[in-house]
Amino acid sequence: DGGITQSPKYLFRKEGQNVTLSCEQNLNHDAMYWYRQDPGQGLRLIYYSQIVNDFQKGDIAEGYSVSREKKESFPLTVTSAQKNPTAFYLCASTAGGALRFEAFFGQGTRLTVV
Amino acid sequence: QKEVEQDPGPLSVPEGAIVSLNCTYSNSAFQYFMWYRQYSRKGPELLMYTYSSGNKEDGRFTAQVDKSSKYISLFIRDSQPSDSATYLCAMRVYNFNKFYFGSGTKLNVKP
Image (cartoon, rainbow over all chains, first blue to last red):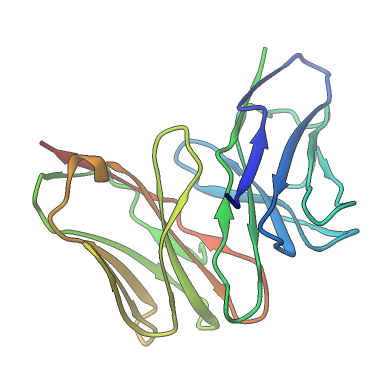
């Protein structure tokens, strides 16, 4: 089945550590996204990538980094510079274009600072 | 002002009721509109997607877009307890792959 796989489902980070969240898709989608979801705040865009080897900052990119070396993979690193990283992180992708414009989501990674 | 506004609820209805969920937006360039359902601690699941104005029906769900009023709606007929979730609206402009989301409306359908 085609879809988006995020791992791990739960992740615990100590203060000062960098952690990387995985996102893999087998939908052959060009564009991929990372969102952060906090209670009562909806989805906030961290980074997005329209094509391989290219990505743009979203609304809350500070303290995060990404790479897009392969079409199917878009990992997110939460660095120690992110002061409040505890949140639910969602990866999404879209085929893009006029005919297939909707976004599809993974099941999320819940990150907790301990 | 946010580009997409959505009442956070919670909205509580009895089983079998008709539910109306709404979003307003400010950017007249939005042309693609989506509704997602999100259960607790899960990723959003695409329910409906529509292009431009008009209605689209799928089973118990109807999506409605009124571009002149910058207003979209999702109607759920014969609501079920399994419909209890948070509903997110989303939209984007043509030819630009950035999505704008509402903050979500929490729906509780009581048996």
